[in-house]
Structure formats: C-alpha cells, structure tokens
Image (cartoon, rainbow, N blue to C red; front, side, top):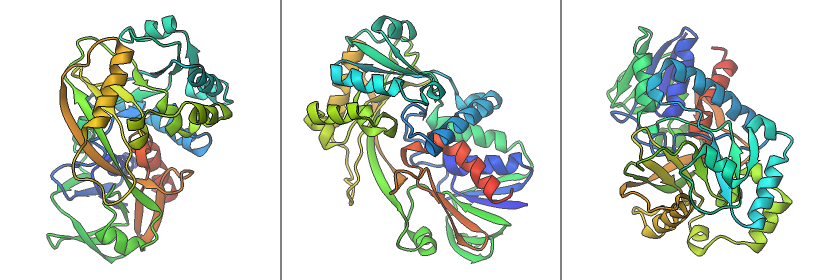
Amino acid sequence: MRVTVVGAGVLGTMHAWQAVERGHTVVQIEREAEARGASLRNFGQIWVSGRAGGDELRTALRARELWETIGGRVPGLGFRANGSLTPVRSPRELAVAEAAAARPDAAERGYALLTPRAARSLNPALRGEFTAALHCERDAAVEPRTAQLALRAELLKSPRYTFLPGREVREVVGPGAVRDDHGDVHAADAVVLCTGAWLGGLVRELAGPGLPVRRVRLQMMQTDPLGEPLPTSVADADSFRYYPAYASPALDELNARQPQPGTAAAHRMQLLMVQRADGGLTIGDTHEYEHPFAFDTVEDPYDHLTSVVESFLGRPLPRIRRRWAGVYAQCTDPGRVVHRQRVRDGVWLVTGPGGRGMTCAPAIAETTADELGW
C-alpha cells in the first residue's frame, strides 16, 4: 500500500511511523522545512493524569505504552517515565486530590496521595511549603523540539519512506491523489491530512464550514538550567480546574469558594512544568479561545507562573531563556479525542486532539491505521 501523509508534526509523523511499521510505502509532505507548530511548542509531556475516564484515558494509556516502546528504539526521543506531582495547599485543593485518588480508575493512572515528606523523596527540588501532593506514576515526558527529528531519522533508514519538505499540498486531484505547490502529483492508496492548526485553505475546502474543531492559543517559557534535577513533572492545583479527570463535587466547591487569582483566571491558566534534557524548565501555560488571537505575548502570565514555581521550589527561578506563543487545534466536543473524517475518496483528515496531541498521537495514529485497514 502507498500512503501519503501531509504534515510533519507529531500526529503526522506518528501516522507515517505506523504505515512504515506495517510495511507500506510512505511519502510525508511538510510545507515548512520542518514542522514549527504546536508539536514543538509544548511541554513534551505524556500526560495521563488529567485525562477523562473512558476512551480518552484508554487512548492516553495506549499512547504511553507506544511512546515507551518507540523510545526504546529511538533514544533521541528522550523518553523518560518521570511521573508527576501536583502539590496542594488548601483544604479545598486537598479535597479535590483526595477525590481523584479515590476514582475507580486511580490505579490505572498510578494515582497516590503523598505527604510532603514522601513527595520530596520523589522530587527533592520541591522545597516550598505544601500540605500534600497528588502523584501520577504513569505520566512521562519526551523532548518536543527534537522528537520529530529523531523519529524522522529513524524513518529515513527505511527505503520505503520519503520526506518532502518545503511543499504545500494545494488540491485533491483524484482518489488518493494530491497536487503540491511545485505542481507534482502524489498518488497513493490513502492520504492522511495532519495539518495541525492550519484549518483554512484546502482543509476548509475539503471539510466544509462546519468543521467541529477550534484553534487555541497558549503562552509558555523556558529557563536556563535549574542546576539540579527536577525528577518529576510538576503541576499546580489550577490544573484541577482544567483537566476532566478532576471533575467532582470537591472541584465544584474549589471553584465556588477558592477562585483563581485574577491573572490566572483572565488567562485561563494552570501551571505545568517539566525539566528538559539540558536542565532548563519548560513552564506554562495560558489558554486563549477568542479570535482574532493577539500577535504578541503579555508579561502578566509569566509573572504569575514565576511566582507559583518559586513558591514550590523555595528558590528563585533561573533566567528565562525563551518565551513563545503557540496555537493548536481542539475538537469543540470535549468528549472527542480527535476528529477523523473522510473528506474525499481515499483522503482522510485527522485533527483536533488539542492539548492531548503530544500525549495521544501514537495511539491516534494506530487507530487510524486500524480503521483504514493498513
């Protein structure tokens, strides 16, 4: 079988990986020299802890398994089973953590509610004050800026894989056939469009105006090396407000009685933090849903995140090395992991995993391959 994958972000690259692994011939087309979207502008977290029960959790757990398997073959992914800690301070935050630890699927996630002493035994860098911490053993991380490069280097070892950068697919010219902006036609048995947050142009033409996917903008930052290990990823209690796994009467009480600080509420913020291979910290994030998006970044969210991180670490944050904004595509139905649609004969659109893209991409691609009979 011949497969054309359009897009070289994590979702497209995982589709190419699945096709090559199953013995097919793959051409992967990317409009940039390399992908530059949300697949690079994220935490690199394989984030099981906050996923909704049911299909979303099953997808995340399967993806976590696939990431670990692929990471064993491709060391450049930087896969590490680091887990996460969410320190809590107030009684209401603790009640949400207790409710999460009591979920029927808590064992699948590797949830455990830890004392400060037990949490610091896992992550001694957390020298600030907190009353307990929710541990998720199944969370993991990879290096987002280099993961696609490492995967592609492995794919290029196969004579059945071709990468064509600097080409934009402009039209579908027949079943399983697309034409790029160089005028070249790429004929295949299946075309998979993994165009990320690029939802205009050809995507709008093929999917129509009612595509149930929206774009979301975020701000993040990265520091100089911390100077010591941060053995786990770290979240704050505002992540309880964002992720569906924490929905409970205790969360309702937290939202009603302990609202977010003004900056965090205005920018729909949570803290997520993971240490990079060079020792720096990737820290975020914000969520902006209203179009048109701002073209600049604003400082208040960075100030808020710095304050929260320093309160957990009990020390000043290293110098900020980078700040950036990113945009990802998210299904408007929060119960859907991804939007998968046959838009023409032999052509499928796969988009909209939202903030789950880095986590779930391997399992989403595996499902696509199974459904298309690869």
